[in-house]
Image (cartoon, rainbow, N blue to C red; front, top):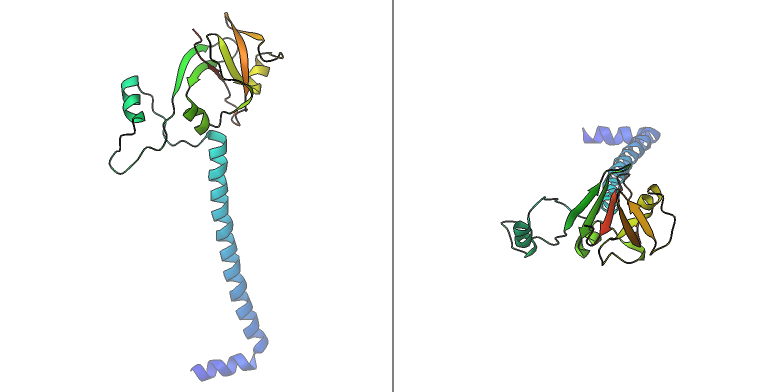
Length: 177
């Protein structure tokens, strides 16, 4: 049987080469497609981390639970690597929904909320916001200028790198109320 197959391959050389070439090209195509799918998944994951931040869980909690989580207690089968805190201090719902939040450095790093210029707020009634939020509020001044949001005046101390998502509605403040 093997002898017959060998004779057939030698007699029909062009057909045999075409079959081998088609097998080789099919294997290459399948390998290339799987490589593209894998790199697409990796790229999507990196892009999601860039847009939404490098965090995995969001928990609404009280101070006691947060302190126990932040202390770095090890659980069964997991280890907490980073813990960031975001606290909503005030909300204004006039014209736009604006949340005044206070965060720690870890949260800002995980959410990619970096300063482009200025500083983060340190005193009462100081805010830092991204350019998208400031332009929607009609602010065209410089750092240190005041901005009226709702019934209060705030001093703009910093401009943040804009979020990718269209839900940019947060302003950072130290003690807004």
